[in-house]
Length: 175
Image 1 (spheres, helix red, strand yellow):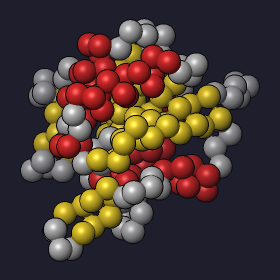
Image 2 (cartoon, rainbow, N blue to C red):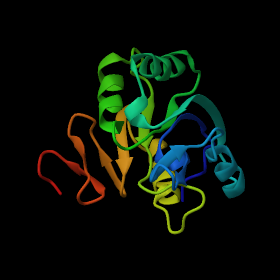
Image 3 (cartoon, rainbow, N blue to C red):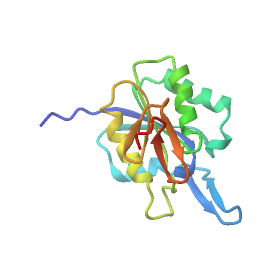
């Protein structure tokens, strides 16, 4: 067995369903004011150093060019080489493609992940699985930009959200 090597992982928070609650009057998920993701990581007690940077708390359909630039700048200015970006699922592939095209750094691994069901207040939720899988994969993948959903790693240029199936798929027809 290999010796464990501690990593430093920066989690960039942008909102999305993963960090939302259900608003009955609006019949939709609404982003929380404060992220529940730092508490989640505190409770699971990972051996790695995990730091959090909140860029915004928005539905991904509300993200704008300035938000995308802020995500990019957080990564460009960070000392970390490992990043998990929590993000709403509607525009996650778009943000991944933006980062793949516009990120200056080529020495880091960036995974975008989210969930179809909020992390808190719902059981079962896909959020803990997607966060855990992303956390494991960010330490093993080579530098680049990835989307991590449904237990799969996707290239940002080949991923799409299939709303009817409630999951992410490859646009190349590989499920």
